[in-house]
Image (cartoon, rainbow, N blue to C red; front, side):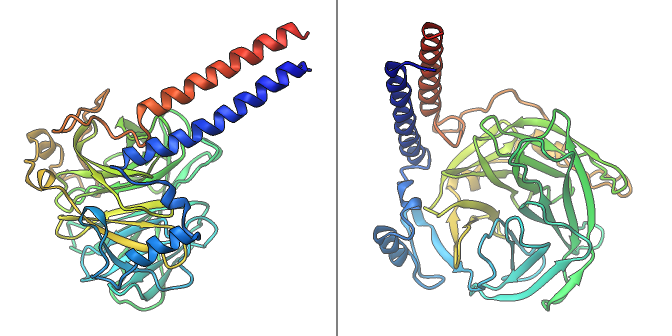
Length: 388
């Protein structure tokens, strides 16, 4: 047992830990381009309600700092944990979403007014922990394809494999049960928690982005097999605690969302720019508009909003690297789901402004947390030795 003095010290370090958490929150606000992260926690309070009222104008009129605007709010009372978001690749003004875990293998087609136009159930599918979705187009048929990622693993390896379901985009917007193809995956280096999925629009090759302090982008094989487990291989790093990811419609870049901001890349490790995101209760999803000029981002919660955020001009004007064009060339192999060959990069380059990589939480905050944790362990160890 610890002495009385030891107990005081341990309690002191507990308080220091709480203070560090507060610092992390404040630093996270800085990482998000000046957002007040406390505003997220403010939902349900008078201050939070005031902000929501100010920003909750009807679709098309609600505006917020940085040029973003509320595109719509989900009206369906069943959509309480919108975790994935995708824009229909073939239908006009159709948006897809699904709830988080324990909600059943169901997704919703939503109109530009936020009202549900159809509800679809995947036949024979499970929903252990759905965390994201993506949309692509079958190059052979021109038909839309939807992908649903059952990839959440909060225990970092509790499941022997994870699953992604592939569904042909419904031709009509009416409630239906739709067939799905299940692909199972495992990481080459052990289990990970993940929430981001993206599919290259030119080739259909799938990538998963892990949600960890040392996050990474993992790429699936060119050809997916439904009869065995597919291996995901690491091709680059990702920001801290990534919650979603998406490819641009032309495949020239992709975006990774964190709780605080979003970062656009040409390829793993080739950062283009960081994009400030609006305040959300719990930032969960991101997608591109069909014209590739805006990002859409959503949150969990009842009647949660979907924001439209303009991409910086330097992103729209940035030329696609020759390496990215070469990697994105379609693979003609029959049945391939194919995509760019990875170019592993150890680090992440700074953007044009020298802002550096988007780490989700700034490095200074992480170092502060590690310093306090190390100090606490050292003092507790010393006390334990003296009180044997």
